[in-house]
Image (cartoon, rainbow, N blue to C red; front, side, top):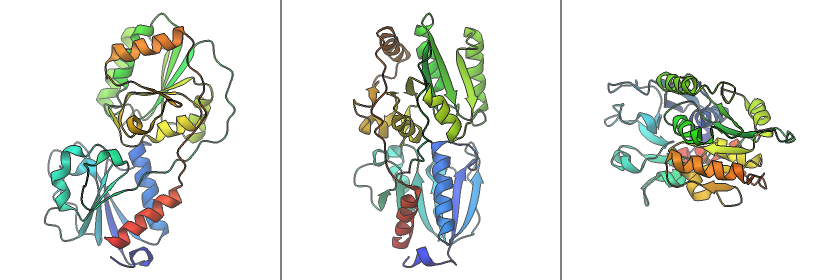
Length: 314
């Protein structure tokens, strides 16, 4: 599709789950990618589709090309659509390789998502909007743990809460930052769990926060807990790493492959008792310290250029 990047008449339909309101990593990537394409002069049609819809959905015929968020591939009828189609994979796509044949291009935000030798595949990772420089606060009397992500099954906060039960009689607080609207049933289960254990004043559900507010929480935190079953890339993990927080990572995917010993620890067995005992040992032995603050360096301008190059080649 030569010359696409400079063609103001070219139109793209982008199909995304549940809109782009929540500040999840995938939604943040979608918003930044859309902004970059619009800045390049391309006309974008955004189709917001409920992720839990039970029926196959037809999404009209606007645009010359379709970009489909991978979370929607089992809900949509696109096999006979004549438009060029690109699949954008935010999650683990290892089990969906049969669907790739219906697309003219596959984009993953992390290399770990795709089977080896996937045809027509590109990796376009996100950028990191590093937090404003905030000096680390003096350590608080109890261990400050933090985790960022929409309160949902995808991010695994209940697994984390079950894990920290073993710390019941030790001094700690847990800060959970993320949307309370993405998965209402799961949020309800989390709130009931906290009520049952009477953890008000010990576990904080902050809801969504902007970059400056998260930076403030990071400035007095001691450790970042990555508790999702799978992280495609882990933007919040990268931000915590840059903020010198050691990472206890339980997620498969990108963090499993790229987080080194200088930045934290890998918890390989997804068992609440194992994570809980690990945290208890670190807390009792005072073995949690700031890291060198090495982080991922990439700008959203670079992400936009990568997308425009891809579209020109489709």
